[in-house]
Image 1 (cartoon, rainbow, N blue to C red):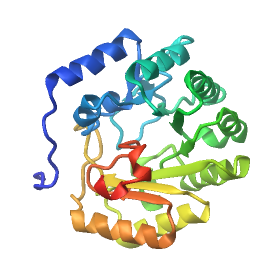
Image 2 (image 1 turned 180 degrees about the vertical axis):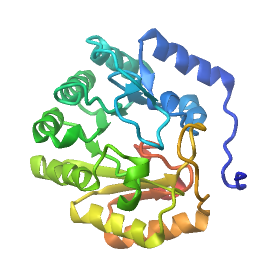
Image 3 (image 1 turned 60 degrees about the horizontal axis):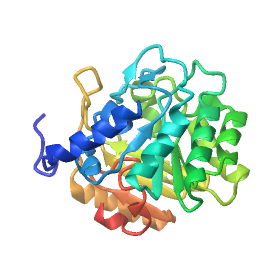
Length: 285
């Protein structure tokens, strides 16, 4: 399937990429931008921003859409919280996004490591906002509580796709379990903002996408991102459709009518893409 005209990105300045990669490597840090082959990496790195991926670069699950490598992960790096904070300071970040692969090998799914990193970043300055994009922790409420008690500004957990497609897209995940994580987040901290993301182009239909939006609003989800699925490699599930920009606009209008505080919907939108700006100018993303 050939790429349509709207699926294009400008080539970034090579110097900007080199500078960011050298900083990250010097602190032994990973980013989801690199590990998941994100199409926005050039734009984000050239603006000296990135989504930090903690707990290593190996995932214990086998999602069909994801470009992160699978395998047996290494033990959590005890120096990672301080190294993340060093990177935040060097990049002068005021809004930080932190995610991780699924770590089903860890008793708490990596929740305690998330908490340590949130606390370490907040030591730099209380004004820094931290958004965490978390796995489902296998439904563990105690793990979720540990993360939320550390004080993130936004708790993000992606549904990724419609329930019908979970066996192909997220075979080890559970749609209702993911919804419940978002619901419980609000119960644990009524002041926290919750967020989720969807990919389209996997074979879903409009009715299914709208129902997912309704399900998210029912559990109090505040923010939603919708973007085009792009196949990271030949090992991943193929793209079924390149969704036209006009359809993304329709999804945006539907989401607004359902009451999301903010919603970004366009082909290159990703869950953590322009995470700070989505609050004020989602229409530009």
